[in-house]
Length: 356
Image (cartoon, rainbow, N blue to C red; front, top):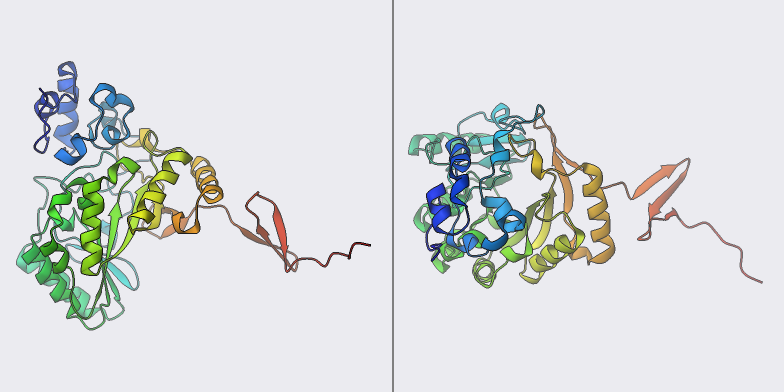
């Protein structure tokens, strides 16, 4: 009988859970020696053990020997976090917001993670008290910082007490008005999102936003929706982040179901990320042309509420570039806008002669 009742971290665990053939143990151990592995019971039970090779949940979390093949364009720090890190735990890439990484562990480890060289057991772990104070001091000293984005690692692994304290410390900084928590926990470990934890994210002085990372509609389970509801009832505003991944969500039907699922759960689709150039992830990447075709097809099928912004984090950490094709262009003194059927329509519309 398979055992998926605890977090799976090794080839032995995966074999016991019925998710790995014993003959592949050595190749999976080689991957696990380089990149962290963790699969929560919630995700393990969603996987189709009879067809893991084609299962979109398994593709995201099961180690794959292809991860050990690094393409020439791939890099350990694909969006140059380190170059924009003035103090440990801080990434300051954009003028009015910073990333704060209080810890470097996650409940699951995505096989396409762009920080895969920086997260996991044995990495830097949580910021020490002195390191956290240095990070907070940096934020206090930069009055242009309006928003703090908590990431990592997954900040929802903080205890309710630590989350509440960090929330208060940040909200006490006069110029910080927005706290945005980036997390996978409501999907992969929804039991951690207790009423106590949800309330810990709320305080006077700063609005709470939660950005949920999910990539396939099957991730939006009954338990996940209940966790999201607890966050919303406590006062959090919810948005989504999705990575466009070959073999996971690279067809319009899946994308449409995912985006509709987000909206039905009270989560506004925010970003659809083109995969970053992280080491050993080339098997996940689509071309930009394929991504554009998918997002154009999504626009033709689903409500405006269901439309995320298709973006690429530019190598070098310059910015997030919007990849969707332009829907407006100027020719001479005339603007043209793209209709749903692809036609370009003059704006303002040209005067047409009245019919006789």
